[in-house]
View 1 (cartoon, helix red, strand yellow):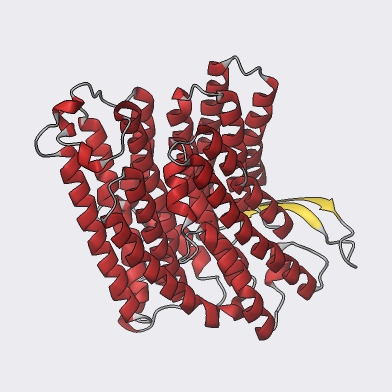
View 2 (cartoon, rainbow, N blue to C red):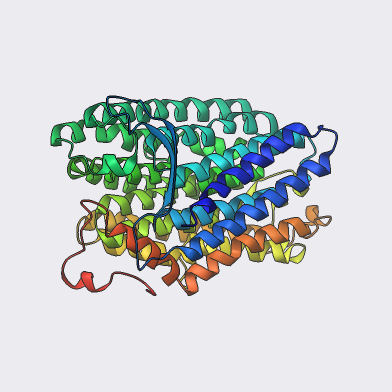
Length: 505
């Protein structure tokens, strides 16, 4: 029931891209309008899917399946199908994509250079992301995964800025390299299962041998981990952030990096659970290293985008830590962090783009006292920063609390490293806000104006879920928890911590 809603999430951005192809490029406002309308429609459907998901029932819902090829392997009743469904992990990530994509279309209204081509590629990317979150067939999962990644090259190299050719090529080479590993892993699973199908529900029921799972789990963990900014395969990410145009940076950090972590969950933990015993502790350790490394690197940056880029590496390290705990609290926190970091970092990049369009610099040391000229900008940027450092009452606190509580009983040393990373985050965020917004006003910026109405709408669209999750996390926690408890190998934290399953649930 309601499976058609998931199909709509694919068809609306896909249809917007096709419609854009049919309209001549000289009609700039037509392409912008189509982009915003498509973004608004998918946001509405995303909210509806999230609200309609029944966490009491749990499991995969909104099931819809259309057979494409029936004669794969020896079982003609199986094969490849467009099989859609969403669980409590996918539902908030579908919502995340809707929020960030809609805000990105608003921010992109001011694009003057080839807006037709920009919005076509933008909507292809958005459709690909939706496809990854709702696909229940490995063939189509990988198809949508690549559909989400490949437009990034053109979006950066055509509409990007600082070292855009280098940033785009580095990003594409690293991500395609990771995709090769995922591709090999998918066909190894298909061959080993011997079921003649790529259908995930069928593959999740196959009992793969310990040796096979241990051997091929890293193909998914590293292959998807590259996109998630997994240390030490993260180096493409800060350069890609800096080179990308504003809306693409928002999608890149806010949504695309989450596909990698989601892939580790969907392909690794759910299909090859026997491989988690050896490899998930490694993922946790690498996550802790990324958290402290990203925070220390952000501490020493002067470019606003580099600060947020390395901050994203740090926060995605928290996601890896949560996944690596393999307990209900930590994994719940990892998914919460995926959502929280997605909206928070998208708001960061939206505001950086807003000030860069006027000042034509991202040098933190060049600013000072801009709250006098751009108070709303400072408020929105500041709240994103406070969410980043984990202030109670905002989404970042809810997510990080779960991660640290889940990590302490199993890896206390690395939990301490994560907490230290959060403290360093507070240092560079507060120092950044102090340097830019407060203090003596730099007369160089007397002509600065407040952010535009499009940027205001985008900013408040992203601000709403940051506050909503921080104040009332139960709708998010309950949906995620209903799926996490069903993940193979994920156990409850023992002792007193078992009585702390959720915050606000």
